[in-house]
Image: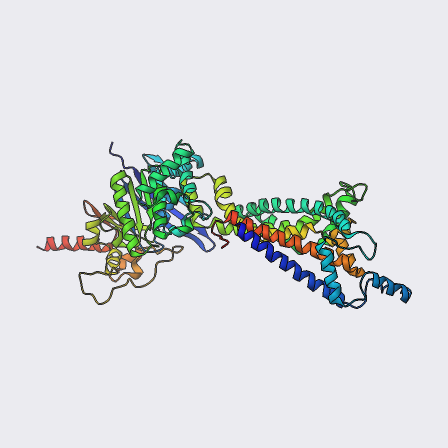
Amino acid sequence: MLKYTIKRVLLAIVTVFIISAVTFFAMNAIPGGPFSKEKAPDPAVQAALEARFNLDKPVGQQYLIYLKNLAHGDFGISLKTGRDISQIIREKFSVSAKLGGMAAACAIVLGLVLGSTAALCRNRWPDRLIIFLTTLFVSVPSFILATILLLVFALQLKWVGVFSTENPNYVLPVISLMLYPMSYITRLTKSSMLDVLGQDYIRTARAKGVREGFVIFKHALRNALIPVVTYVGPMIAGILTGSMVIETVFTIGGLGTEFVRSINNQDYPMIMATTIFLAVLMVIATLISDLVYKLIDPKITFD
Amino acid sequence: MNEPLLQVKNLCTSFKVDSGEVRAVNGISFNLDKGRVLGIVGESGSGKSVTAYSIMRILVEPGRITGGQILFNGEDIVQYSKKQMREFRGKRVSIIFQDPMTSLNPVYTIGNQLREAIMLHTDRNRAQADERALEMLKLVGVNSPEQRLKQYPFELSGGMRQRIMIAMALCCEPDILIADEPTTALDVTIQAQILELMQELQKKLGMAIIMITHDLGVIADMCDEIIVMYAGRICERGTADEIFYNPRHEYTKGLLRSIPRLDTNHARLIPISGSPVDLTNMPKGCAFASRCDNCMKICLSELPEELDINDCHKASCWMNVKQVYEEAKGGIAK
């Protein structure tokens, strides 16, 4: 297990390195640069700026300089705002992670409960209702759902306040962010639960005289979780790093918004930092979900 | 006072499907006495397994018992509540299934699954349950039992898993063990070992066994009585000797003809032609009529009554009635 984890971490470093290289060269291949937009500054000023941030050097050399700084834990400063990037990320991620963490937790819990319910009430009204709603939530884009939620619950019914920095009410953003993964988990859980409930060992458990609740939660759920874990790992990473759409609709300044803005501004160090941060998070989440597999399914061996 | 341990009376079990009602078990009755071994044979779809699941009441939707009684020590378990049923399963009657590869939960250790069965029905604590589990594994002839308790099902062979299923079924000393094709999924040498083990355990523990199989050879020297089922009904019943040497139903005769034999030099086996009846649309007469070589007019229109061939043999076939009639006529002519 330890050997496997170490191997995976080493591989992860390689993965992140490749992602950083591809991103670095791809973003430099895009015409223009951080200082060549809007009203063009004086050519002399632009040259000075570029020299200061090493933008006048060949791309390969720029990359090496970047890696060297990165190795010292230095993400650089934002070329747009001049602020320290580590600080920006820390700040924005705390917002995104709070929102995403709540959304991910709700999505997993509700998804498992609804999915199991649907499987157990197969073809009766709870199942039909759950499947209708989850299909709706999976197919309608989140910005439409978020807007409708905002219109109905914040503006018409006035049940919850609109999110603002003075009054950070996370209810609607969490719901909007949660609906898609929750629906997806529900559908995954339902189909895998149905599959498991038809297995011979479930019949064995019933024949032993195990009570129905234990049949479901001890014998069936653990087996049914295996495919769900595959989805949940990367889902958590994705949701934690923020959704640009949801953050925009609710005007929450999170990492998702920052990521998109950095690309629009061609803010090179910011693009690199957010990309690497996202990649690391994703790699960690996949590693954890692989390790969780082992806990759930003893058949999986790492050697 | 000599009440049978288990009395099945006119049991009907059906499955409601879109195209109608599948009458998987259609009014069967039989008794099982303490410590006896009853064999149920028949081809796929004849209702053997459904009979077993009905006795355990582990039918899955949309299957349900639609009529009849299942009396265990005189109590009708069809009327049992869910809770009573839970206490009944595994404690009074246990079952082992066809495929040991899939009948054990893959994510729990053997020890865990055995312990669960033991702790459900006895008031042993964890340590005592583990002790009992170990004892059971030794009883069913599993080698290095201590180690097995810690293993997962996927780490064991099919024969080993079936032994563990047997241990699990017998750990609470049930009065009846139902074996639903326990050897079908195993290879031949292992089959023999498992059957031998079951016979040995039956002698040692004295439980009654209902042995379900489609393989007449399997039950030949194990069963006190054999029931032959076809299309959800019992077509013939009797002692093993009667069934094997004096079959009186055309279907049983067909089954016996289709067993490979070493003592005769038949070049080819004789299969039963045709295919099983459509259970949603049962014929009015004998269900086997359409496949029977000796089908008569009456077979198509009327259901044959069960007729006593002798004290320990009954069959439901119009051929027997015809024979009785002809013998009587011959007697008069003489």
